[in-house]
Image 1 (cartoon, rainbow, N blue to C red):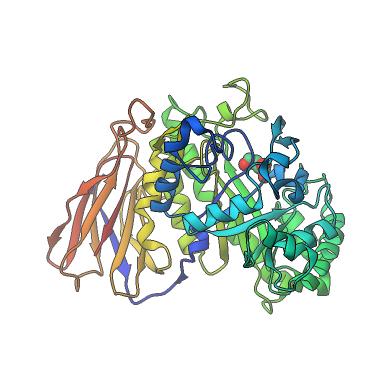
Image 2 (cartoon, rainbow, N blue to C red; image 1 turned 180 degrees about the horizontal axis):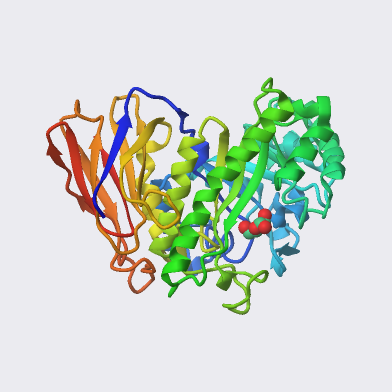
Length: 493
Ligand code: AHR
């Protein structure tokens, strides 16, 4: 490659990168919650457990950080009855836990209070997904009253008797999940009627609740908002999900598949923009409805029981190899999230432990982190900062016409500027010149790369892919860095 020049406009302001954009998702699916986050109170594992949670996982997630956590599903939420998960653990019912075609016994030991404690330990805002599929407005209103009310009702007294004297203050409530599919196979108009009923009742119970309507594709979203008509003010956020599914196998992919996954990750921004446009048209710009990217990430064929079954792994555990390529794809998506931070109100990587695009993997009481974990850590300086405009002044394009080198930048209140640079090229080094940062005296860089893009960490090799220091050189009014192929780096000035 000939070299890329990026201009960082430190005077610009796209908007604030809300911590909610760096959210995560924990579903009762596979080993995400049980056996991942939650080990329970097994006396033999006592030294590895803190209040039932996997101690090392907690520490890793605290460092990530996890500003927002959505629970308990996913499709699981559409079978979940919250009362099953409160009260003395030993007395909780054992239910059929169902999501994505799996059926397991769920002993409900991880219920509302445990989840709230997890959020407290992680410093995460809780986001609860309500059951519209086989639940009722009354059931969801009761959960909200139980969690949030200060009025001394029987439900509130029950919460207090269960150990929470103060309300949990949950703001974000999802009214269903994927109701176009696993959440009841609704059509958009019927769901709109159901949504209106649920949301009306919930607003009476807690007028401060932020309600998330279930979106889907463009035509569903348009029809849903149109059907709500003058009751569109019942919607605070419209959820969409995007999984990248076209990148071939999880490891051992070819060049074409490598670039296909990265290109698919980039389309996430288009989806956010299109959804925001549909919202704008429906509200006439008079009301703010955020785009809630409730679930995003890569979903490899090995971890699916649907679609392309060329690489099945049976039984489906929803676990997959997390490689450097996946981490680069995540960085590409995050670049788009920053550019769309005015309209994107929240986003949750799916899922937080073990399942799908997980930053953390476990085996029993042991754990390791994936390259995506490191990429998220490399983005930590952007959380809560102001997104800045970045221009590719000159550079080399990939076959799809997009620049091989791209970047996102943000400014913190203390004046520091963070720039995250991606070299998407599979095999070529990129020399990167950064302009617009001449007033800074210096910067510190960290880079994530590996000898091959399908490199991954594992229990035996937990540090195969990990960040290293990156040198930054001054050249007149600009700064220079050398980006190896398939790499992500953050420079903080
Ligand atoms: O994250 C796995 C599943 O993907 C969720 O349960 C569902 O919402 C989506 O289809």
